[in-house]
Image (cartoon, rainbow, N blue to C red):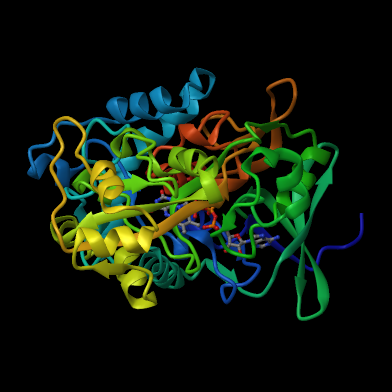
Length: 442
Ligand SMILES: Cc1cc2nc3c(=O)[nH]c(=O)nc-3n(C[C@H](O)[C@H](O)[C@H](O)COP(=O)(O)OP(=O)(O)OC[C@H]3O[C@@H](n4cnc5c(N)ncnc54)[C@H](O)[C@@H]3O)c2cc1C
């Protein structure tokens, strides 16, 4: 083998949610030297453009709010949505870590609250946690990277994409990093693949997700699935590659998303033919994307009123929509009907509340929404400790994966994605892997 340029204990590929959490937990062990190689924080990670909603069951905020929940209830909800019982051990391991990790993030000085106003389809308890200002994932990632900087035994190397995995006799032994135009060979006892999925790799999307059609792409440019081929070469396996985190809340012509809480506050979806084609509360936003794809023009008007607006406007999504001018206002049903190219009678019919739901009242707000792809959910087969497994189900020595690089929690279809699954996979597996690599008590 050619010589190494440098040597660390843990090499983390990707400095997003999973990579940063892995490093934070591993670095608690002062005897561990950890390097995080990040393709480009300027391009960004999905965690930083996410809403930053953290799903966890059994937290102190839930207890304070009198909400009964537990890691088991959380795992059961995820598995009911995904139908992927085979993945239960991984799901349970992540849900078991979730409350601890969210509380730990708060204890590092991050202002967290329970989103009691954040209902989601498929969730049997309010369990999304968010920052108190509702500023989203950018704030969270800035905070966690700042905490990482306080560790002397961590190097966060930016603008340094990993371009290859180095192996020896079936074991991952290092990575090749491109930095300032030259290639560096970095030896490592453990390599953690935390570079997210492949939603911005057109050939892979065409191969695995052709059924999504041509969705709006709402993720970052760096999700090019780099790590998958390296792990496959070492015997890694892929799973649930046809699943994605989709969104049926993307505003046409803007790319911003309206709040997923709108349907729970009375918002109605009407297609271009004036049909109310779905019970808006019955589907998560990933699942709703598939429904929208099959509407005329692959879109529908989401209509809501002042009450729904008041309940949702403080989310980062609604603030972005308002700032972008993505939400239109109409004073009367006649004006709304004109904008939807429908008759007033057809519009009134479409807005008739479903049984048990409230009526919308003028003035109205609306946005044309369509389907988008945010991240992929298929990826490497791992065990509940984040070790990458080969075809025999044996761990590949020295190789770990988490977040979007590993198989996610949606099951085989995008419809199985439950809100909060993405960051749970990423932070949760980072927590588990980092703890395992630190030879100190958790
Ligand atoms: C718009 C949007 C909103 C979302 N909202 C939520 C939410 O509220 N709650 C939730 O749970 N999930 C949400 N998600 C999903 C969530 O953001 C992702 O599932 C999560 O960020 C995945 O974490 P990760 O660490 O795998 O990847 P990321 O956070 O994307 O980090 C991966 C990092 O790896 C880097 N990288 C890639 N290739 C290489 C390479 N070759 N070498 C070095 N570095 C590399 C990237 O630059 C990036 O920084 C949202 C996603 C999007 C797009």
